Length: 151
Image (tube, rainbow, N blue to C red; front, side):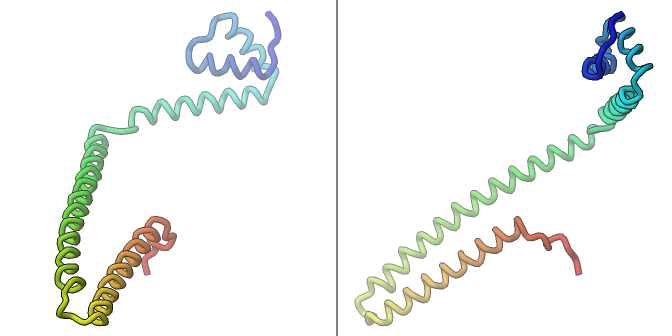
């Protein structure tokens, strides 16, 4: 029987835990473990980790958790589709409003130039400000570290 080093012993420990060790390797590992307290501790830790992970697999996701997981996936899909439909609707409505605005205000020869410039500036500025505030709120919502804190 040939003596093994700690590196080889760790390899054999993993084979032992996985249940694929040969009898010769088992004998070499046992001989090394009798002489090396550090490897004994490592082997105990590996066995404990294997036991814990085996126990976790049984309780990892019961059927109820899978149902809840898929419900969340469907909720996210539904919300994504809803946002797309809302966006398309807003684009259509705002497009119609923009054409109507251009027809009634900008290209209206009965209004004075200063009135058309003033109304156009007011509307465009309001839209830009609204979009800026909404965009900022959405962006800071994702990274706001105080979001979860309640007063």
